[in-house]
View 1 (spheres, rainbow, N blue to C red):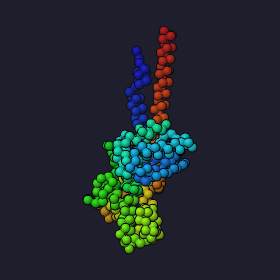
View 2: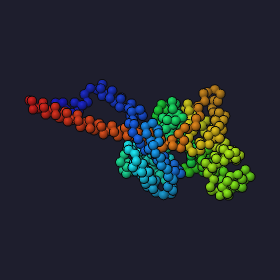
View 3: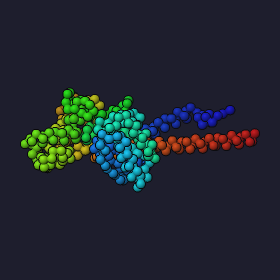
View 4: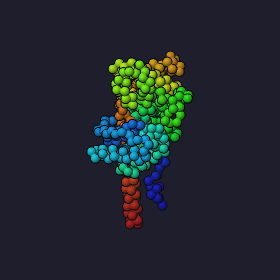
Amino acid sequence: MSTYRDFTHRGSARATVLRTVGTRERRSHLTAPRVPTVGIDIGGTKVMAGVVDADGNILEKLRTETPDKSKSPKVVEDTIVELVLDLSDRHDVHAVGIGAAGWVDADRNRVLFAPHLSWRNEPLRDRLAGRLAVPVLVDNDANSAAWAEWRFGAGQGEDHLVMITLGTGIGGAILEDGQVKRGKYGVAGEFGHMQVVPGGHRCPCGNRGCWEQYSSGNALVREARELAAADSPVAYGIIEHVKGNISEISGPMITELAREGDAMCIELLQDIGQWLGVGIANLAAALDPSCFVIGGGVSAADDLLIAPARDAFRRHLTGRGYRPEARIALAQLGPEAGMVGAADLARLVARRFRRANRRRVERYERYARYAEARRTTQDSA
């Protein structure tokens, strides 16, 4: 006697085709539902949340400061939940994507380590999914930003892309053929913690001489404050600007003064840019991408940063003059890239969530038809 399993799985060729189609759809953003989702970008200093449509347009955005890193991880989770609930009051939200500044495991559930936050092996996805009524996806913030630039920004059309995000630290991501390369354990792309100066500046990750200690927002501010604290003649402009309150010196302030012609601030951005170019040359030797996209808050300095980075890249590139050079492009989506990318990746979760529900319904309907056919056959007998 034929069973329900025989009835629904007959024909190995057809089953193979269905499995192939299913795998292809799961890997494609093109089949995701065109529904609004919320993206959350969590950095060392701010939490940004926004509702994003299927074309990458931000419908509404909220921003708040990141809770003190010495506090419990639950404080950060509470902040995320409050932002999502606030946005949900005004928008039909179908999923939530989290771009976390830290190492996220291959299952995109746990934040294994966050240098600038107090997360250590934190099951962020499960905790938030238990408090929110929609599916939740967690990924590294640089992966999210890279995805956004590939989908909607400077990386469109590129098949081998590397994203560098310059903010409080340095984040990174690798995309090949429309896929984020997360590595075996989910932590690929942590370029900021490559050692470039043995025995150099101490990094919050615990090591010394990490790349982000020489080319990041923290590095920029540290150098400016050290010169100001030493009462260096070249720092008189910025000392006067902050009226002697050295602790008020910030990255955006340095960029602003550089644009106004302050020689020290221009020089500091050139130093940051040169270190950026050295690191990019090393990544080109290892990964050979067609394009580097530079984003994050520090990238707002534009050519004050990118021009020296391009020069240093060409001077340090292995095989220079005998190989194609990767394009170095400034990110187009600005500080919203991580938020937009997290929201767009979350649409894939919304798609799978809906498909799972639909399949349960379809299985029930098939079983009901099969049961009805069996009853009809038995009655006629």
